[in-house]
Length: 470
Image (cartoon, rainbow, N blue to C red; front, side, top):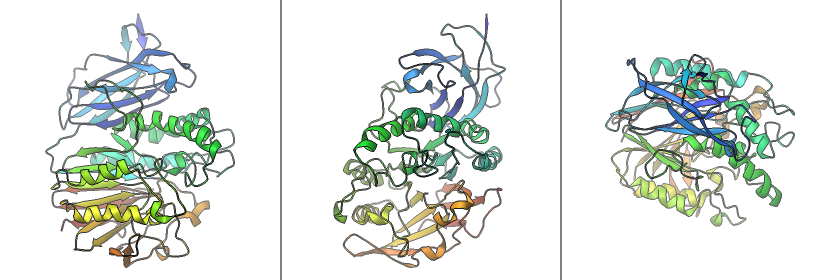
């Protein structure tokens, strides 16, 4: 009997890939499985581009405890290989003849560890108007992903990196904000199933990290006992399912063949070609205090892991991904306590670690501020740190007041640490682009390029930047 391989309701999403493996995520239509139901309904097959023979069909588990979703790990791949795949689901655990005509098709690429460059798409902050019924009200937020997909098809980047606020659980602030697990899961299903984003996610490897709007604005500034015990667990469960599960944050079993357990932290590292990435979780480990020296953006464990990472293979390019801006700062009266400028003591420790490390090719990628710009920091002693901010993928005109503009930024000027000691000089040599945009970032042994594109894929040369390692 022939079984038709049906399309996933969300996915497939191609996630993290190493030299010889890749993760692929898929989710069933809502309510197809209930809590406790787990079946080997997932189906996938793959082949290297240019080959005619498909692999054997791989079955994988879809789990009602995780909103009917599952992640399959494909192993034994060739480093630097480009692959195509077909994936979907059937409502039968038994092997059978399969009809793949309705299945989703996509592609992915594995890492080539000795490559002399890596190129990837980067962006953050995709606002969607969500009504009281939990449904997205228009398709404007989805349109920029068509431009990203077209550029990806032409340029073939290694992956796409999303720097926070992939969904807005509070698009109308408190009115109609997601509050429980069903509402958060529905938000992800609505958002990640939008057709143009869905195409990009199934055709390009992706890495993601959360920021505040996956929970609520400026989390945990307004957190109370009720939010900590109801909203926060619901938001984090949905984040774990739809973003963290296909990232390196979700641990694999010893053989690397399946997800082993829930992640106990959301920050992670990965490498691509000549570059190493440290993707910080700057949202769920915060310690807020009235005493500025006690405030922490990240845990001591994450901070120490970052310091160790800096001095591991220091000749490589070191890329810190932080969803909120490390520098530059805002002028008064625009300064706030939510970004790194509100955590000066810990920021001072991180920048001191950069200054003292043996690594010299240092880059920071960030989002959050609904504007895009290049900045550089010359630390005391002369070492350079390069910052590239790209935000937002979609931010509506009605909320233009919540964008960064150049007059708001304190540059050129000194960046100060927690004790008032200057850490270095900040400069923003190009334009601050305060509109919807995404970017293509390229790292090589010689330097880096940060190319900005507007929502119609027009190159924004005034805000783009090319640098050489000093």
